Image (cartoon, rainbow, N blue to C red; front, side, top):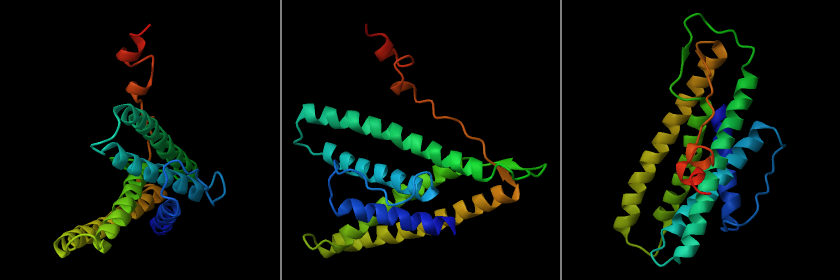
Length: 200
């Protein structure tokens, strides 16, 4: 199943990152460039680094100049994340390009890659909630509360994986079709953000 493979790749990416636990450590993608495995690993690595940047910037004692640098880095990461989602959707479009659509085929509320994006973030939530459950520098009440949250996250992972599998089955059978819109992030475009194009 596609999601079983994706979840394993996300888990590997997260484990690989935490071998270094350093937002500046370069990615060493173990999969063949151009493959879906390569795209999924790269996507999750971006998510994992950004997760930790979001932690760092919330330090109440952070230097404001450093905080601004990290905020700019998070902005760039968000754009890269969006680009990776579009690469995954392009891979999907290529895979299903010859599928004959049923006359009553319907469009889905989101593309497969945006659902996969949520699955990648969910893998990070699960990893870090598991860390909280295992913490020994806190009390049992904290660990128990985190255990309950972890159970919900695991259920969400199972449900989302099922939904993605069903969507891919519907696309492959021609019951649903993909339509991809490029994410037009206006605030990143110097010609569309008035704060940027207003500056001379």
